[in-house]
Amino acid sequence: MNHFLDIHTTDADALHRMIAQARRMKSARDGRPRGMPDDETPLAGRMVALIFEKPSTRTRVSFDVGVRQMGGETMVLSGNDMQLGHGETIADTARVLSRYVDMIMIRTFDEAVLTEMADYADVPVINGLTDRSHPCQIMADVMTYEEHRGPIAGKKVVWTGDGNNVCASFLHAAGQFGFDLTFTGPAQLDPDPEFIGFARSRGSTVTIERDPARAVAGADLVVADTWVSMHDAQSARERRHNLLRPYQVNDRLMAAARPDALFMHCLPAHREEEVTSAVMDGPSSVVFDEAENRLHAQKAIMRWCLDV
Ligand code: CP
Ligand code: NVA
Image 1: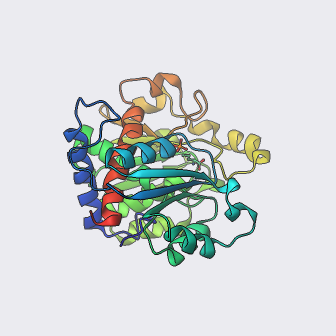
Image 2: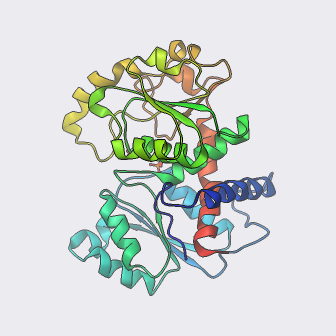
Image 3: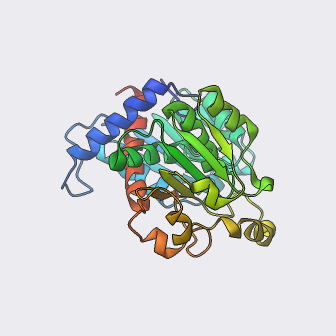
């Protein structure tokens, strides 16, 4: 039994195999109605609990559809409606759920909730985003880059804006998939040095460049995310916007990257804030492929978790 808690804590060969399997499963579905199960249904008879303590569109729908395509069933639970949100411990919740379901995906705030769930569950636990990381997203992003441009190893990825949870998983992926990452954003919002240290310890070059135009020179991939994440206080909104405005991804910034550079955003995007509509809807953008690939990548992650 495998938990999928983070990219840096999962074996790199296993990550590569998951991406390859996701691509095979995607092409095997080519042209089929979305609701039709796969030819192979490795999750037949399995029940998966999907717990959300924060809002979600992509994670909720892609996990739900992915389980059904593989022949399983899901139960979508809101943390607030569970006893978990009213004083029952994470450990007890994990022990109880393990008596009913075959796998647990959880989106939560504090990373400690995820790790405690994994410590006490007898079934695999998957990280569907915490305040610290978003590994499923970056598996889809690596898959998307490679579909369009071939191996991501050796490429230059530029993260613009807030050094947040999604940036953290990009840094973990830099170490595991062998690409370099340049962070461009204000010093107040730098990524945690621990994430940078992981990427460097695996031989990736991590650069911090405050000037966004200089940062994107030679970039193969430019990435943006919201300026205010779900775990950020709304009272910090104005301060963050003021700090982050110089890091907006627009046509001028994309023109400073390589001519074949791709643009990614995990979505939801705030158009005309961190990215302009011209870039989101322009020829470099692969944002909807990323969203689709959540489905395929997570199907491979779930198969790895259950070894099926
Ligand atoms: N990218 C992502 O995780 O989207 P949701 O918040 O809609 O799940
Ligand atoms: N950084 C964003 C990602 C949303 C998918 C957040 O945590 O809100």
